[in-house]
Length: 358
Image (cartoon, rainbow, N blue to C red):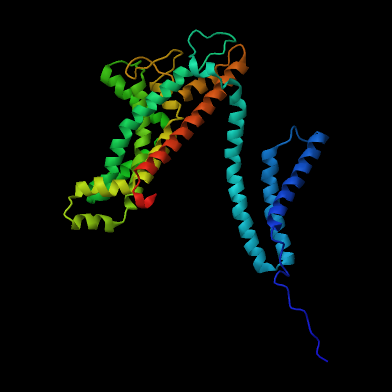
């Protein structure tokens, strides 16, 4: 008598489809319950959401590997474990960013009002609210001037290295760019201070354009490196096709190479701006700080947002909370400025990019 056996299920010996997500959520819940119990027993001060996600994610990676080993076997368990490690690395990398954003937003919103954006700190004493208009204007002026200085120099240097540079000079420029990339920001401030002190014979000189020069020293290596990599990505076939039509090299660069890489170049420039817009040390040295409005880069001290945040935090006054609220609101404003600049960069790249890349 022939015995008929049921066909093996294709899903036998495998975890359910959404088991990974369920195990991840369960791990967070378990760690959260443990933290709550520790908090209730007095072993820890307050509940930590970041700690819950951190340790819960680690527990998830261990749990999914063990369960997969029991149910699916070693081969599938290794695959599950590697997937869990990649996901865990992604979550853990996001935690500092999310924590930073949440802390800045929650602490900065109390002073995110019209007064903050319409008044300066001139004649502000005691518990008067005051504002950061002078710092916002100073940041835009100083960073804008630094961009005007850095972008032409950096872009032309990148074009030379990619299109023309050969031999010792190109290698020397590349080496100097690598050295400039590692310059501490305070050294750039000291360089600008010493330069203008010698030029104007004024050892106590402080003005906005000096801060722009200091920031440009930090920006130029980033602009050169990012633009250089974007220019290298342009296919040589495009250049050769242009040369075959009799187009000179300089026109090929301006009409073919640059438009093709404009999206990446714009992104690199925005990264360079984001790199320097939050610098404090060089601006403290050469731009100084003031409580009043100043629209002239070439005259008198100029306040910027990073220096504003630092001075409000370092000099709390009679009521520290008022100054701390201003400092957090200034930090939130700085983050929003960087976000707006990146959105503008994406818009510019989309408008000016070749049609084939849209």
